[in-house]
Image (cartoon, rainbow, N blue to C red; front, top):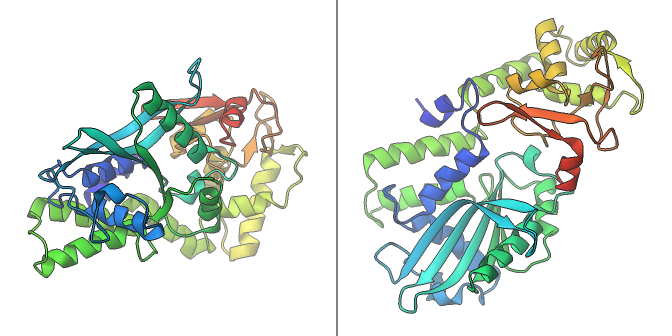
Length: 365
């Protein structure tokens, strides 16, 4: 039994903000998780490997010093901090997933602020987005308003090494930055937590209590499944076994065979997609599965929110749109269509929408 994968089933209630919240909990040495500041120190040690001039005020013998609650430093973890991108007017804002503030208790000076931006899927990375740049500007504004001047570092946490995530990271023109991964890298969050458990086994750190050990190991398993629920994993395994890859990816591939500005009848798309899947896999696609995927991939179809589309900017699932209110025809979706087009998704409590022009203004499309 894995509590994370159970809770993320059905309506997919564990999402990116939920994962960020649990990570913030593990990073806070003041919490009761049993690993003190060990994970935080592991991550910060990566930063000083980039440049030995980084984080010098909390270094001892070329390693990050003890940052536990009994050390000479105070750690303040702030999840979901909203910052202003403009010093005046304060209209445009960004939400930063996790802020790690480090204060020297002797001087009561806030010496470091580490901004951690978390992505649990590559599909949530927008190649044209200025998110990291915006968060840096917003954080600088945030501290200038309080007349504090900490050194600011940016940590970009993405699923695993990929061209998309690397390109997004490289766009940030700032030297105090670090690209961290959840898995499939020697210095990933997964491997850091494994090292902590190995050190406990070898008697190098204090024992972790059973409840925390179970919880963190469940989280490790959740990371290994790419944050999928039991239901999602089972569904994708069945789809891959039957058709070679998930149906949504087959639909994305099929869409590349269509003309960008041409209007297609829904029945035509249904029939042609079924033929496409049969030709690719040799297996006939079930009509219910086919119809559900066409619905969830049509951005201005409100019912897509019932199919676990959690973000308006999900490029993997934003494939079609209705060009008129009859909903009898569809066209390929692109940012060049009517800017008043509604893009539906499942919010925390209900089905919501955002207009395409807002996505573009926020560099999310």
